[in-house]
Amino acid sequence: MSTNHVYLEKKGEVATIYFNQPEKRNALTHEMWKTIPSLLEDAEQDRGIKVLVLRGADEMAFAAGADISEFKTLRSTPEGAKIYNDACHKAERRLAHFKKPTIAMIQGPCIGGGCELALACDFRFSDTTGRFGITPAKLGLVYSLNATKQLVDLVGPANAKYILLSGKIIDVQRAFRIGLIDEVYSPEEIVSKTYEFAELLCQNAQFTVRSMKYIISEIMRGVAEDTEETKRLRQDSFSTEDYQEGVRAFLEKRKPDFKYS
Image (tube, one colour):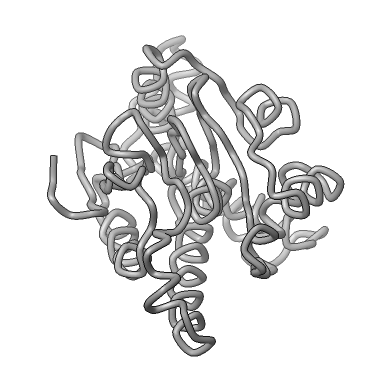
């Protein structure tokens, strides 16, 4: 296990960002927030990587919010809090705009900033120990609009108000019921099931995967008609080698061997 509190590991076509502060249940420090964008840049620029997973370094926690020790140091003044908040915003926005599919693999607490990062992923898989909460109302803080929108888009305004205004921690069953997470697995299954799904995404046509991710993000921004960019993506798909391979494989009743990365 790395001694870094957050680090990137690549294995085949899947990269993983690990939160690694187990003695504090992977509580997120300012330094960790500052490091995340560079790890994302590394994974995005690596043409051999097709999917990114975020997880805790062990099974005890995804990330249990902010490292509380920094409330007495960096976050003790408005000026310091702005430095911290700017780092959080940059990391969350970089993850939300990551061009390749992302999966949050959740075990144990997924609270505050940890939940913010999970919300910025495309998929959220949890084992039965998962616990979720965003607790600014317990601290007198106000959450950013971008991160709040991620929550509202997933669970709707009523459930978002319940989570944010109450500050309550919800269990995995409620999280699944309201759409906060996509899949629930046993602690014994969560790792294998998450990486099996990641491998499934790797096997599909990557031009399609990334183009559809972009188009869905445009829809979530309120775009209701094709733009020049969405038209271009659709037209360009017909000229890719993967389109030709997909058609051949369909006609020959075999599994396609896509090459785009």
